[in-house]
Length: 162
Length: 149
Image (cartoon, rainbow over all chains, first blue to last red; front, top):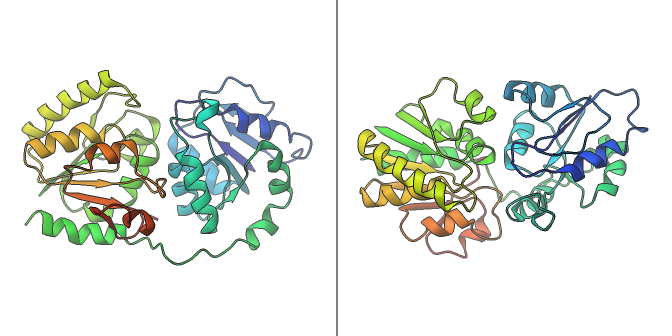
């Protein structure tokens, strides 16, 4: 199953939805579901603007491939569920977000081997067709980032509130 | 101890929720938007719904400032923690005025520069965390102590 999500952002992201729709021939035979958000483009695949949060988790868990915008919330869910999403960043100049922080974020996540990144819709086909192989050859990012903030905060809070 | 947790829904809330081991033993209340993800993640939590959207909205900034003023004076939390975005700004500022310790955690998406919310609270926030070490090097007050993930 292929799950596509544009997140809960109020800006539309039809560019991603159209890119997936353009692959309808390649994706014949595999279930696809697209969460379209505030976008107005109607894809040929099953879709809905929003689905319950628990269902998003279920779909991510079940999906062979997750294709999404480059949002931190989506990435956290994918990482927590052991998935490497194919991501495309929303662009401010196209009215897709308030600024270009998604591109900044996506570039860093690629370096850390957390995602496959496409810069333009035309790149999606290659990433979908070669998904497993591309994941196998992901870089192991520099170990400069550890998920240690929670532990530090726990100690810091004890000090702050003494 | 009572903790006030403030985050816009979406990635900001996800990141604050991701570090919940830091504060889950304390009494707490959350301030966020009534979106699907918030309602699901915080189904068993005490939540106050804030005004949205906050993106570049002065009207909702004013409304949330008023909300922060009433809520913080009523609840008297021992610390305010926010991952942004816009909704965190009035809470951190009002917290500062009320002499409540404040913590701001810059989103993991901001690696090369600060967010607008981060810039707006930077002068007065007590503890300013960033999630990338090279960003910490750019700002004297910024602390890098790892990421949420």
